[in-house]
Amino acid sequence: MFSSLSNPRLRAAFWQALLVLCLLLGLWLVIGNLQDNLAKRGIELGFDFLSGPAGFDISERSIEYTADSTYWRAYAVGILNTLRVAVLGVLIATLMGLVIAIGSLSINPLLAGLCRSFVEIVRNIPLLLQLFFWYLSLTAALPDNASPVAMGAGFYLDKGGLHFPWFAEGWFSDWSIPEPGPFGLTGGGTLSPEFLALLAGLSIYTSAFIAEVIRAGILSVPKGQAEAAKALGLSGWQQLRLVILPQALRVIIPPTTNQYLNLTKNSSLAVAIGYPELVSVATTTLNQTGHAVEAISLLMLVYLTISLATSFLMHRFERASRLKER
Image (cartoon, rainbow, N blue to C red):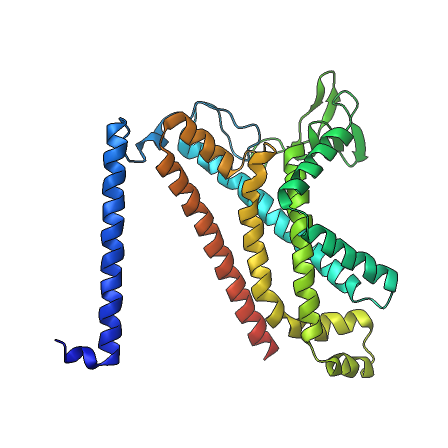
């Protein structure tokens, strides 16, 4: 046996197997100790509670939900709320970051200075403080429900948030347009002030980091590429879109993926301003049921799944961009 361990590959496999066994043993001891401690408190480890009625309402939801719905349904509402702000936040932060990055490289000193100042200020203020700022600013600035501001095309703004035309029932039914009434607006869809504040805070904060990533990617492209494109008669926008950005993607995509993941995970701070996303649902669930381990485990699993899916999609996009470049 010891003579076979002289082989480097067998020796490496032996130590790896030994490490896995030690980890499994440690996990078994932790789970066993956890079950014993929970049993002493009259709590059984399991997920059966998810099929029971949640007993609490969720103010903002994308699917049908009542207080009589199951905890499974409550988690689904929380996941959809998290995905909604994450997807929109990624799109807005990317567009803002691109504009700010281009502006910071402008030959206009005023524009470049403003963009650089934006990046430095936003990056160095904690995100939680920015969320509080946007939430308090919105709630103070929005008009009362009795006198909403009409923005045209069926859009209204009041203390309840942004109201807009939406489907009356489901996805393929008649349109429902918000209409002022004696007790405020009725009909249509609504984006709450909590959602708007969270979306603004996450998008602006993340855009500052994405702007620096894009700026570094553009600067990584040799100047000769831009000079050659200019010699061919391409305009400044055509140089950027057709020559510089495609080559900069190899530098931009990996760190931008990290920023997308950070935005998704930072959405958990929404609990501080009252937006009912996944963490808020999980916190309410564990407070009501006492199944803290199960509730937090589901929370970790969902965030892990979202992060892995985002990384996978961005990796595929990176490979596609490299093949296109070749």
